[in-house]
Image (cartoon, rainbow, N blue to C red; front, side):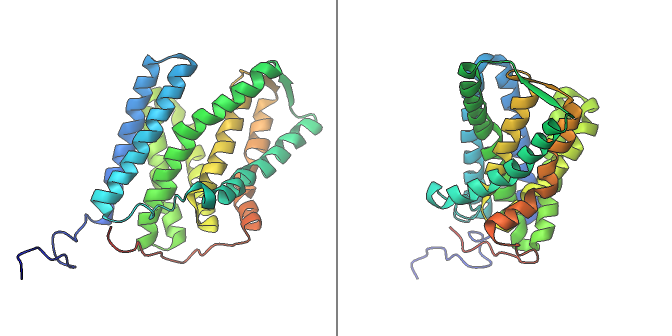
Length: 283
């Protein structure tokens, strides 16, 4: 023996914090990160400030998950199942289509039946670049970092200990805690009644899509399509909507009811809802 410590099941090198500790640390760190970046964004007004804040948030979120995998989980990066672009573009399109197909159909139904009217208020030269910029900001500030943390890191850890259906419920509860705490701390308790059901529904649907596709990119696609359309339509910068309540309740709500079944059809997979997925060997 040369005196070198041997890593084994009971050695300090191989031990890692219990699951509740890892989950709590990462959720709290994510909440603190978003809270700080919201404060910073208020100091950097304008499109450039939004772009810089979004890019910084994305980089810091990736760094958070990398550090959590390395120092808390002691597992390799591939555990969260955020694959490279070659393996991720198909699931990404499945996720985006899972929102777009029922969402666009619902909004079109509202317009055709005269329940809602959508009037473009910006020229095409403003509309197209504006929506592209909005999609980029949503991708960097919301869709990619939130999905990497909640449907990536947290779901991966939960699914190693719980059946997939229970992991979906647990990560959705954490997503509700994260989202409502963030909005209440910045906007007050008045937003709770509106935001809590939104985060709960979004967390459940995205978790189910994660199970069906087995890939975080599908969740990124769904999240990106939802937030880009919602902010682009309801933000008032490019279009005005009459009957916005009906458009929202029918068009934007349709993917919450039909998105998972649409993903099942597009992915050709009903999902393994009772399966637990081991988290692999140490890094």
